[in-house]
Length: 381
Image (tube, rainbow, N blue to C red; front, side, top):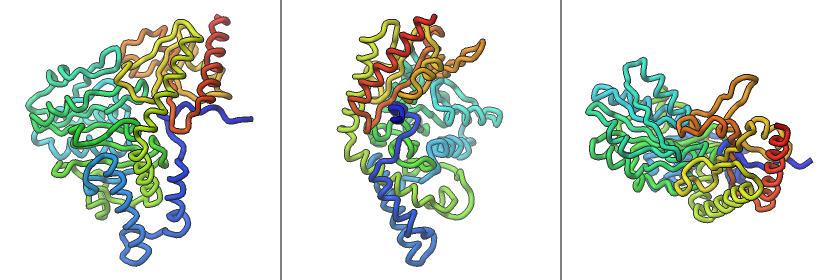
């Protein structure tokens, strides 16, 4: 039996073949500790330097502004907690938004009992944060703004460049979680105007368990991991050389083929969206129509439950749900709730996300499978 068609690239990505090949020597022979001064350690240290340059290239920053981490969650934690602890004498107010990933929202909530005040900005029906709302939320004691670059569920791209102007004018640290945007849309930190940016390896065809944090030169940020002096003294712990090499290669590939990959993913996404619209009535797309990741399609099917659709299509199509329906309750994602998607629509929401490997034949087949499943469930009442 063929494996299901994979349409959950925002959940995680397969390893790119070039990434696997780049990592192979560090799995088999080049096992040295980069902190060691002998031949084996020097080879590992050079590999780290090369990977740092590769990650810096896709963000268009200096290699010395890149800290390697265990993934997007650690990067977000380091950015937020590190800023809060470094600047708490200046102020204790943080601004974020209601549709952030839990790796941001839960960190902010954790800081509240410790004396920090957090403003959770609303979004509009398309998932956009208002720049005016950001401006109105600013206070003299505001020390950090953390707004994601693009949403993982609906793909809406936030006005990061405009928000960064507000932050710079008031010397407020600005962080963005770019886990979903790196490799799909441009992530030039100079253009974005951010001080801190989070990268997650497994969202761009690198392994799980590795990521990076961009820290603009001169940005005060307390250590997150304490111990020896790895990562220029900013993140203790022996570096995960194998996966860092993989992340570096993934970033090199993503930077090289960004326009081509983005165009392909968009074409596949739009083909799926158009096909479902032709097959079905009572469906709606969630997220901004233009300011949206090229690969992301959040679609609601009225009159059916998301988990029932996934059960019907599970052997043929892999996707994710925007709502979990139980015996007497419906758990709608915090993103759809914040966007005020009506419950009768939200409970039937699926997220389909295309990738570099997605083919036209897969999209045609997935469209038919999903369309047939929805029609079948609707006929059953």
